[in-house]
Length: 397
Image 1 (spheres, rainbow, N blue to C red):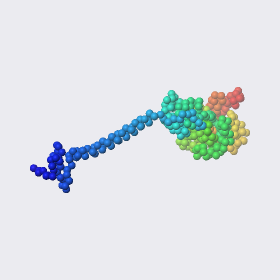
Image 2: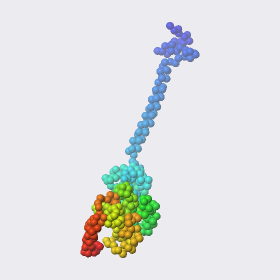
Image 3: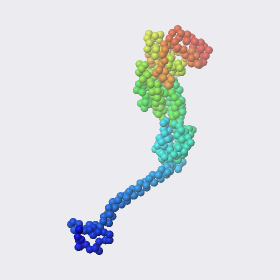
Image 4: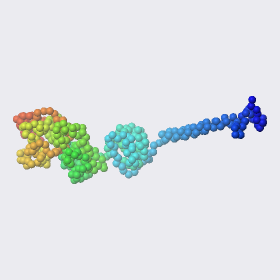
């Protein structure tokens, strides 16, 4: 049994506690009462709860702010805007792409305002067509959508360049349908470094300005127009597999483009692959009735600097006897295209049909009926048929 410390009096011991709890500890200090010990053990827990409570408050506050931001109206201009901005919608642009570009041009205040306005419009993105639009800076997003969904607001010069034209003829069409002079286009053609021509064109745009309908924006310049035509040619070349086809056929891509231009000048529709085969047969099969001479009138007319006509005289052929484009006097292909071939002609040159033909003649210039043969005598019969047609249809010959 432990003896009481005489220094501890009964009145010094709180009710309900043992005097032993107040015994001195080694070194002369006393034990703390158990009540204080229990209280001090709770302090870390209370601190943790306080911190957690503060964190919960902080998290809840941030969550409320985030929700408030979600339901807050997107930043938008009141409109109607000021100044003038020419805005282009490019093929493949999404609503987000358009919105980002509009924000960059300071047409709309925020991407969210534009996408929200587009979502509310019945047409939405489906009503927005590729092209150029005249807008203002700092417009209301809904006003911008109203402009873009209406095709009547597209600002462009639509120009159609048909197949079978030379560079000079294409330049004339561009000059006629734009505010630029022919010499401004010619200057670009003569210094074609920015046009993107393939290396094998050797700086000559003949045959590489693709025939198509183009929509040029109000800010388009001669160099951008001509570059767009070369870009469109590249698409056609890739679609037909021109470079691989040239390798498979044993020609350079430039030679295949030259064949395509001759096919464009001489053939129509389903006859184009046959015309291509005649050209390849005359180039490749010897001895043959043509002895390597293509004898294509359109190439001689190119040498003469004039458009195609039905018949050539011997004097006309001899007048340009030294020209590399005179396919009656010079063997093989001319040095390059004689005009701009379209999709069908390029495809025919890349994929000629099989056949034995060396000759062809168009016997009806109204319908374009063309006959093919590998017999020279039969070819003469075709020419007689054409002569008979011209005797009654002289205005077409």
